[in-house]
Length: 338
Image 1: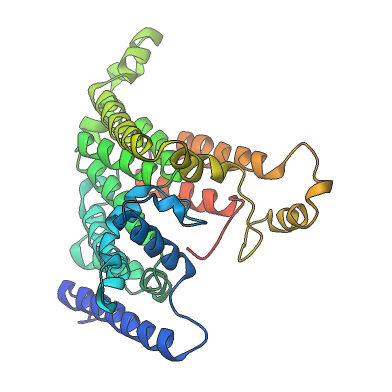
Image 2: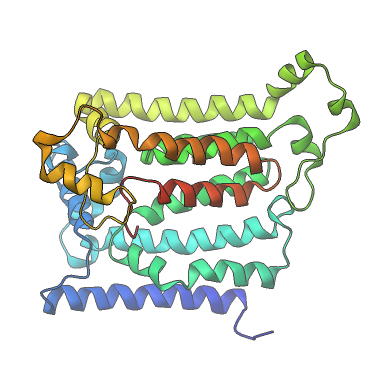
């Protein structure tokens, strides 16, 4: 086995790799007409600057995110290049923390029970992946959401259901799509899965469960773990939304949630719907009343939020979430490198 794969060396390389990219990004931004920093990062930092002035982040055109992101990035409004890079540093550190959580999940009994070195090798696919490091150091906030989702999976396999609910509510508030993970988590949290989950995360029904009546089966569905997850996730999601709505009113709902239902983006888009969206954008007067951008989510959600969880959730929760993510991205009407 390669002596490179020790926890200290892998994580040192992961951090050093991101530091090099951050420094290189500063040079490219300074001397090259082609900027390293993602245009979205300027959207984030502009929104944070508006917040620092007591204004709404939605004063910045094209800011389509929760105000929470602008709040987190408030230090970028402070003077100095280092503070302006605060968000990139935060996103890059989130990558590293996500890699650490991946390793913990793989080592846990519910996540596969891998030996440390094997789990570390698997986590290295994320930690040392140049595309992952490039996206976060350019200023994409996906790393921040990624670490919350991986922490959600870790909390579930550790049976910390209340914490899992809080993280699920937070992630759905941050961006809509993590709600798809709620279905497999609920499906996996049956009475037998919580108490008799095997080392591979497979629930093993008892004989009594197999002989249960339909009524008992329905009652068993509403077990303590599922109720705790639902209450904690809904309370977190609702509290954050009520707070943001109280401060920013209708623009918060429109830009954070409603806008994405009818979004058309035919640029830098790898979606299977890209050509149709491009034609719709080029000839809006010829678009039929049956708008593609409003219907594209139907097959997407049917596969990622219903069919995959039903087929896989009780066998392998982590694998189910991976399959859901792949399907959701593949069928999304806007698909970019992030």
